[in-house]
Image (tube, rainbow, N blue to C red; front, side):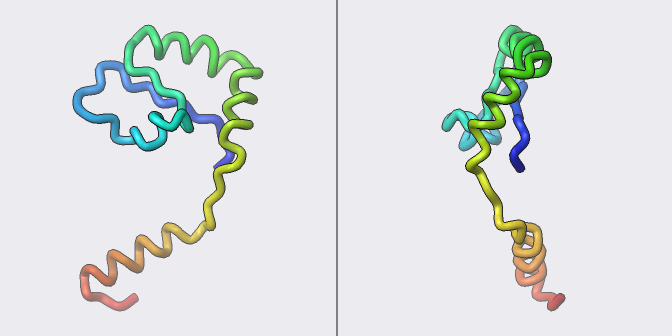
Length: 82
């Protein structure tokens, strides 16, 4: 995916649905309005910050077959052959 990403969730109620990424600092997160404003000022408007985020996630790779596996699993759960 190799794209810089940030998560802005001001006023989040309950658990962070992508906590497995934000807790490991794979995706920077802002839970308050102030943190989100800071992201907008730094992450979106600063090329150096975006470059740093991109370098941080450049090792993350996918095999490109996840969608097909999910579709096959759904068909299997429904008892339908595709």
